[in-house]
Length: 102
Image 1 (cartoon, one colour):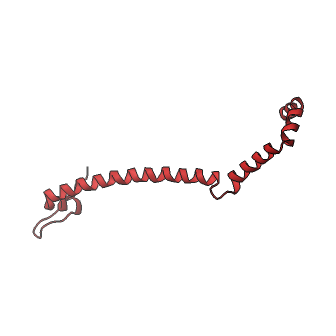
Image 2 (cartoon, helix red, strand yellow; image 1 turned 120 degrees about the vertical axis):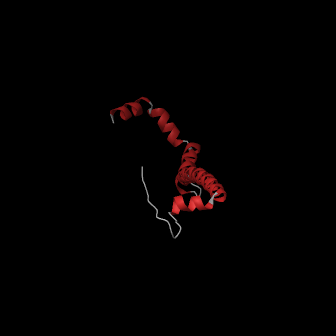
Image 3 (cartoon, one colour; image 1 turned 90 degrees about the vertical axis):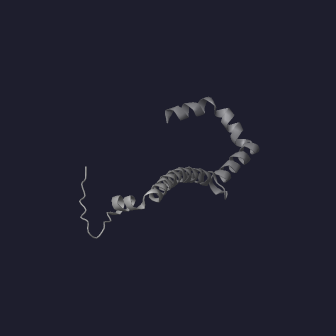
C-alpha cells in the first residue's frame, strides 16, 4: 500500500489530468465494455481458443487410432482364422485352448 501511495503522491498531477480527460474515460469505458459485456467478450474468446486446442488434440488422437484400426483390418484380411483365434479365443469343436500369459 505504501508503494501505491508514493506513486500517487509523485504523479498526482498527471493522474488527475488523465482522469479528467473525456477521451481517456471513453476509452476506458469502451475497454470495460469489450472485456466484460460484449457478446464476443474477451473471456469467451479465451475459452473458445482453449476448446479449439483441446479439439485439435482429440482430432490427432482419433486419427492415430484410425491408422491403428486400418492396420488391424489389413491384418484381419490376410489371415482371418489366426486373428480370431488370437483375439477372440475361438476354437474348433475338437480342440482344447490353453491361454498362456507372459
